[in-house]
Length: 382
Image (cartoon, rainbow, N blue to C red; front, side, top):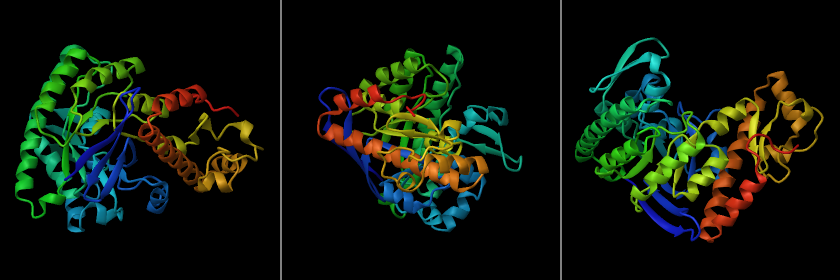
């Protein structure tokens, strides 16, 4: 089970620094969680993430349930033992896959029938089943089963999803409590977070928050954003929900991973973030630097002897040039995605560390202003 403590609050914004205490170590917040969908952060050995100071990763319940199976992972000692990661893990519930693979799913009040993307077999997830599978994986934090909606969506359909998410949250929470009561080591059992839905409708967001916050979850997440809606609508929903969320529990803004979005969400009081952007983009040759986004495949880097970021101290930047990394991508060499991902995750780790330090020192407002004035989200200066 986790504990959460706020240790500093910025005087100019709502940004806060805290510590999530988990059975596998403390997690300083604000925190960005690298995504390890299949129990691995793609291309990255754990030693690199440990060197970066990463304290928590996210793994995907849907994929691990289908392959290799939660029962096998449980027999082998749980997810930490199975993958060899000794620090904290958060597992999602599978609800996002219901959204992203809609053509393979059928949703009812009872649960979700879905077809495996691997062998075509059919499976059925209820809120109770989602909790059971995650409990077997034995992460530090697991997520309530929810219905994530697409954008755009009409009000009536969004309302139905909110009502269903609320019913599922109660069922999942009650089943989680039963599992805790019967667990041999309840003090190290996974904590459970609830998820607030409602698309971009203020009325529905408030309705969902009232329902979910009435349940004594260990933390609360805002889901169903960063799915294609305009940025101003995403931040409007966050501004509506933040005053409703308890101060003594972690606040998780799901699926948000662009640096310019993370820093603004931190200023609005959010603590936790995850996204595939740093790793997926890097494998395709696009990385972030303190100056902005950079496409390493661009032809103008063909003979550029500089590192990705001259101010970066990561292994990639200390040893390799833009020209060489571009050559690796052009040649289809496997070293290319590794070097790019290494830099990208190092940058995100340093970015979050600087954010936290600025909050602790009560200078976050200036830090954010300086960062956004020098950061180009579309293209870094050459």
